[in-house]
Amino acid sequence: MAETLIVKGTSKANKYESLLPQIKALVEGEKDFIANISNIISALKYGMNFFWVGCYFVKNNQLVLGPFQGTVACTRIDYGKGVCGKAWEQKKTIVVDDVNKFPEHIACSAESKSEIVLPVYDKNGKVFMVLDVDSDKFSDFDETDKKYLQQVVKLIEQFDDLKV
Image (cartoon, rainbow, N blue to C red; front, top):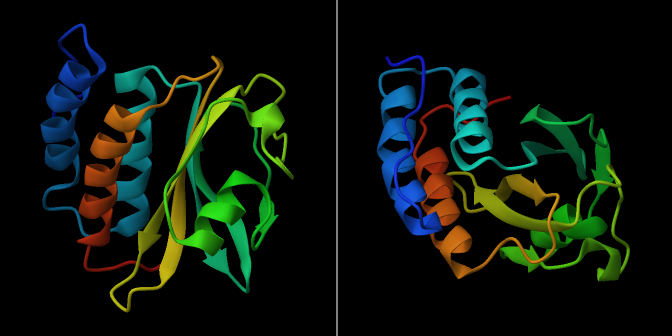
């Protein structure tokens, strides 16, 4: 396994296209879910130069902070609250151009300006976690991010052991 990521290209799509095979290689053959999700989050943070990347796991009708890279984060988020809670509730990817304009936004960091949150499903089709990516720039996420981050989510959903 390589110790450094090599992200090529000038466009966002080019960067994702060079990063995704490296993410797949990072998790290939590893059976531990936390190890895999931790490497995926680190690869996204440093490969795409995101401000913050992490996951929240569904536990007892709340989202509970899991592995992340970036500034300290909110530990628990209620169902339907904030961008993460809404993505869980609505079972869909949510892209927010300006988090300050999102109703009930939970400001874990004042530096966060825009956000994309993607639900991740277990083998029974239930949301089991959300992947949360923040930027310190307004309107930083678009359909390109959605397309490629959904591919990352599909990779996560294929893991045999989705236990935390």
